[in-house]
Image (cartoon, rainbow, N blue to C red; front, top):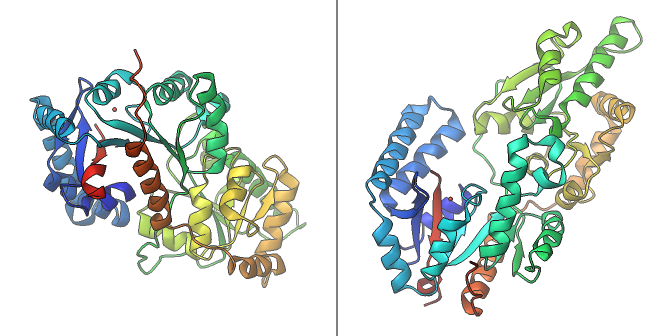
Length: 404
């Protein structure tokens, strides 16, 4: 969405938008439909699917885009654009479409440079946290990147360090790369409907990698100690995020554990503005994830001024610096002790992190795109390697026009 917003504001001479047909080839799509889709999705995500019929509008626009592609509209236009502008970059910011190399190779043969954004290598480095089919798919995405990319954008130094050895296996360790941390927008927040008592939040899809199981066991232990008179009633925990995959144990605890009824509340997927309100007013964000490519919830919480207790991993330290309190994601007693300390009225540990937060700088999309622009300029100005023998809208910036 940030990429779409950035380039929809540019002149049509600078950027064109493309989408992939059901048959694999790409075609140009009208800017007015893209602009309308961006607006409808923004309304849907920010204020919820029922906001002024925004979701229905988004579906109608997506259907119109599919219909145009189905009859071949836009394919010849894209070919003409590539023939006319010899310094065009095909910019793909989703992992989608990387699974099939041939359509991207066709664009490169027609004259486009290719720059993807790689978010993480988790299905390859930690296959136990991914669906089985995603492992092979991600391996193909890396292979396509190695074979076709003229430059690569990554969201963190950790992702870069994980990707480089795999590029080296394909003989492409020298590919230009931009390490561009994702920006954090300050959301519009409505008057929040908040729990009356202090609460913690956990934000992310319910899947094994996010380690919800640790938090639920901590809360069950806190509730059990309170029943036995050995501790205070546990604070409230709000679990925000959709249910993902391989999560039967977590779902069983959420649905069937009597000790968690009341202290733990599963929120699901509220609108972005509601999520921002819940995070901004929380005692702390809890993020015991085993592995991330970047750690956007940590950056979002810190940007809202909310303390963070998270896993002691390289990408999260890259995002949070010295601000969060870091813990081993397997150390349940340490998490319980830290949560109890933060739940205390006037918590010294929480106050200390709030003081550290004053030195933290929110990552901006402006800085992100500065790094992206440097990479794109380098890609179009460097000699292009020989080609080797992606229905989401994709972006095709024309660097010749912008440089002119």
